[in-house]
Length: 388
Ligand code: NAD
Image 1 (spheres, rainbow, N blue to C red):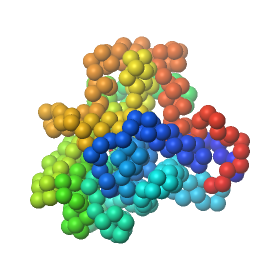
Image 2: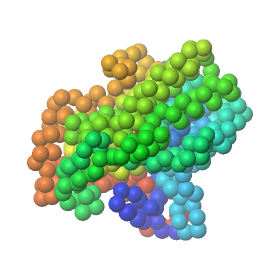
Image 3: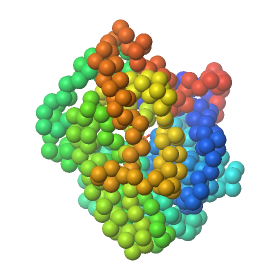
Image 4: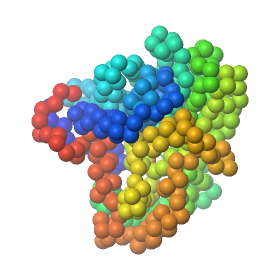
């Protein structure tokens, strides 16, 4: 079958198996070029392992640390003439490459919020790895059903305490316009915290500890974002920011919970990158298109794999123990540098439909977005028949 991109706003409905495999191979090659990570983990569970930061974490664990992995994700299989989702193809490729290196890579496809998937994961760890010494929590989801009550919650991306009006870009048409987003209701705030906050991370860690599948001094890390002034009302001070505050709370609770085995929970604040999750946040694509231009010009550009390699090598398993005043690891340090943010604001204020392509990296943003789904990669014949 010949597969072409089919985009609808901030999602792409198709994915290319050969392109997705190439994306995984490129990230593996980056890690191989960068060298092995001494003292890294040996058995890693990654929750949200199929795309974005979770996939990059799994690649660093496997190929940088030589770790066996269990990856949990929620992806769509191919159905008739509909291709599978990108994360499915990524995870299939990851498994193939890891097994070639003699590593174990178990894939679990299902709802990570459910008891059933937690049980399946424990079984897989017990039978294949024994225990895990690192747990990466990298979920980004629009909804969650609480397994204890059966109630389903939805996360929204809204400001709190007033309307938010900002410049934004329509990525498809390249038009700059204004976006106005109503303030979240109390119920929407609760919903977002339930989905994207720390409750499910705590449930995972409780279950893993109870089932004795965490080794002594096991570490766990969850990912957060703070970001600049421009996105503050919609991000750090909005509903998703509330959820990330709850993640901070959960990190303390989990460190306390793991005290007997000498384990520890970390929060890593990562930089803004193009992923399926970030493209859904209003205002963020324009910010990222400008940030990429500025960081490339200053030779500071990083994507998911560069960030995750740095996190594992320097922070989680390295000598850099620096944290911010709230105890978080800050690998967003280059994004948040004063000179970077000043340059971003200058472009932000000038950006218009007419000059968008000249002063921002909107073309690179579009290219990276399509690349998430395996499209637009050099050397791949997209007119060739591929098996789904
Ligand atoms: P992503 O959309 O690329 O990946 C999300 C992952 O979660 C996928 O593997 C998906 O299969 C999985 N998933 C979603 N719902 C699931 C469910 N119910 N059960 C099992 N798996 C499920 O997202 P991302 O951008 O890599 O985000 C991961 C984390 O990193 C999030 O906490 C996000 O806030 C954080 N983060 C992202 C950015 C960014 O710019 N993208 C920046 C800083 C921090």
